[in-house]
Image 1 (tube, rainbow, N blue to C red):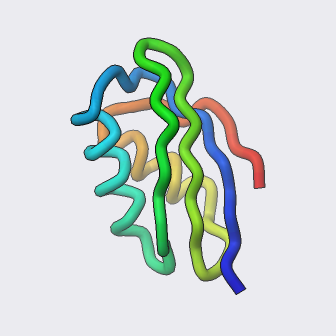
Image 2: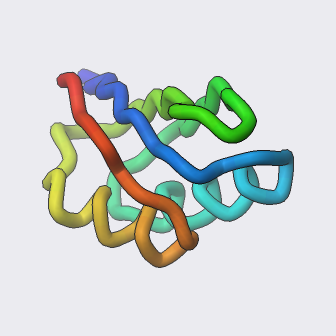
Length: 75
């Protein structure tokens, strides 16, 4: 059964930002889908569907690797 979690991410401003975050999160084990609702210059919502609940520190590290900041999580 798939699990969906929503995260808020700050610092994203364009399609390239969306691609970078999507690429890093998709690389996490078990991630099936990543959907980003971009709010340029504001706080964007990232919805991640995965096989099992993800470890928040792993999600935070992936977003950080992409160059942005995870500001919140809602399972």
